[in-house]
Image (cartoon, rainbow, N blue to C red; front, side, top):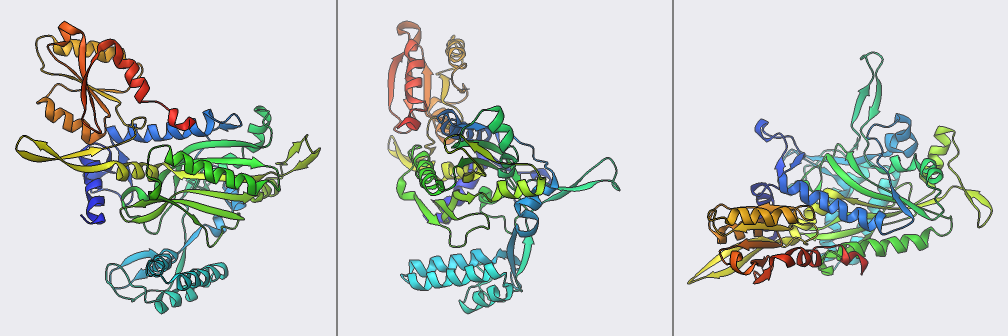
Length: 484
């Protein structure tokens, strides 16, 4: 089956089983905006919890904050977003589709690499980097034409000129239209951390090196918003800014680069599906940057970025605010503006990683027939429901016994109760939403105090004592993988 077909099935499955819905669907939707359904919101929450524990709970020198979406507009001037937060945009006149010029060129470089023309790919990327540095938009268009880059839809090179497109959403804040000030919806969560650096450092008595973590919404008016929830205009980030002594930034950059890859692999995802990709063109604030990419059905794409941001952000905010954003280091008896290592991961992209990685269609024998079982092999700790409680039939006291068991488990695990349809159909429904364990209560339960527990991944079933359900689930569903 083609990878494109698999991705279409993942999208369809997401809607059918309550993971992701098109936003405002009854009004024909809103471009590149999605809602998370009952199962999707649980999975998303679990991803955020897993990251928070790894970043904050398991690191004594990392703390969390929750800053506002609305921020003083000068912040975005200081950060460079007002003047520099642009993407080069180009349209194809035949398909009327819009693209990022740099992404078209990068895709062509990937084609050269796949064909073994590594030097040609490197030359292309270097030329693009130089043109972007000079803001030579005409040169970018010429580069696209020269390399026979065509629109994927029309298969033509009938391109418009390249224009810069600012990605920030603006709005007004004030009691009347005449007196309202223009402000922005934040395009990233990082600046909320930087402007609170002194507050956190002083109130938490934090010593360098230390980190500040945050999970929150961000908004970008993307030129191109495609590939489902891969690129959206409203999205969520999990970011950590780690403040270090100048001169030690490279050491900590390498440390967090390795630590973040370990986090991804701790979820049991095949390491062959991940790779590092160093940035060819560095952002204005960085002296080193790398992406952690995952191999989606549509190719390797960025999931997380690790950046060495130098002291750019704190220095800029110190200059624009007139407030000192320095740290006194008692070990070297010196004041300085710390350097920063950033780790930034998209919640929605990580959500898509989990969906794409876990979606499976398997052949299962059913007597003389072969059925197709659709299953989400979601890591148990992230699964929307950890256990489904299933009375064999909905009579003779079995539902009451099932509810009794469920009430004991509810304080510790998110449980799903289902008594409708044959037990086989109920198993399949739980497979499809990724529930790792099913507990079935039958007539023998009243005699031997045992239930049947079923494993989602191998469909193995065994009889266990009711008293052991809680222990077994704790052993199977925990954060121990983060400690390895």
